[in-house]
Amino acid sequence: MTMDKKKYDEVLAAFSISDDELQKISADFEAEMQAGLEGEDSTLRMLRSYVALPTGKEIGDFLALDFGGTNVRALHILLHGGGRYQVIKKAAKPLTEPGVYDYVSESATAEEMFDFLAELIDEAIESNRSTTYLLGHTFSFPSVQTDLYNAKLITWTKEFATQGVEGRVVNDLLKEALARRGARNVIPVAVINDTVATLLAAAYKKPNAYIGSIYATGQNTCYFEEFTDGSETPTVINMESGGFGKLRPTKYDRHIDETSEKPGAQHLEKMVSGRYLGEIYGEALADILGKAAPFSFTSIDLSTIVADAYLDRHEAAAILEEKTGEKFNALELNLLQDLAGVIIARSARLVAATFAGIVRHRAHGAEIKEQHIAIDGSVYEKMPLVAENLKKALADLLGDEAEKIHIVLENTGSALGAALAAAMTVEG
Ligand code: BGC
View 1 (cartoon, rainbow, N blue to C red):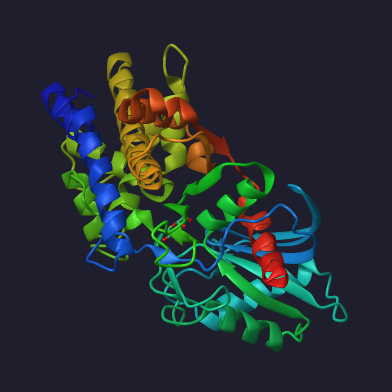
View 2: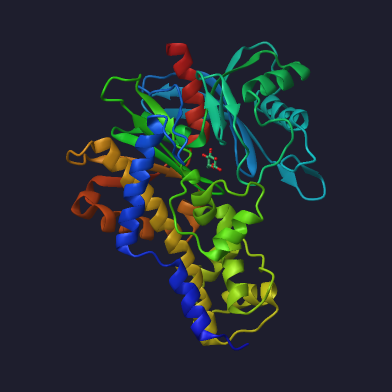
């Protein structure tokens, strides 16, 4: 295969973001936050979560349902206080089992999906019908809330398409499914977004955690809004930052958007999250090779391609050959590895721009304080180049002040956070 180097350079340039452009994106993000908070037109939903940060004194026995990605988990958790907890029982299952079932496609109904969740919860409580359990539900989709229980799904994201859930109060659906199963002793009391769960879990364990983020199949961030002007009660805000739209998409991003389940929505998410990174690479590579149809790569393929440190790049070569049917020489393999790196770096830089925007918003023009940003998700945890690019971009954006921002992995968040939210309803 001979690659058109000029075309390759053009594609690479389209994915690069200069420091100046990144600053502008970060400033636009901060402005969109403010507009969204004030109820003005904004691509950020700024959804109120009706929950503050835990005190660290939350204790007791709770159930947690973690629902929002490819796997669902139900856990029975004992909170000991002071950041300590114990998982008593855990049940986990994928939402899709190829050839067997698929609860996220358009052909699945809300009842089928929530019956599946109820079954998993039942497994976590070992079919106990005599103890009353309060359940916290991490539901990782944009939901509009009126209180901690009442969360109505606005719209599916991450290519979920199950019928009959949009517009519904998700905990009502869960309650009905639990009743159908005879498990009325399980009482859903709280719904939180996974970003919120991550933040609550981090704040339970350490001081100065005000920002929680998910960088996985989907991408989104929440933060603790103090409403220093006294206009509202302090609360965690689920920004639905994956919807941020003041960006410069490439033609590949635009094509992915147009052919997605929800065209026109989740612009940032479609440029940065694990659900789409492989697709972006497949689109760009097809263009470089002059093919009309995009190749289908996953974000795991992308990780393998960039992680290949062998001199002959045989691991990358195997994936590239399998997906494109072409053989590449050593020089081309290096270039194609760099392309993957640039797509990943763009993702991390854009996420960093959102973080810098939130940190600045919270500082209200004063000095930035020492703080933790808690992140969960496979892209942050496992994809090569992500964590380092994120850190570097924060330094590019915030200069010396970036030293005060400590990004920490909080990978117990979705479950622990749900249990904490349930516990916080008891404390009032
Ligand atoms: C959803 C968010 C969620 C994020 C990470 C997005 O697609 O809209 O609510 O936090 O994925 O799971």
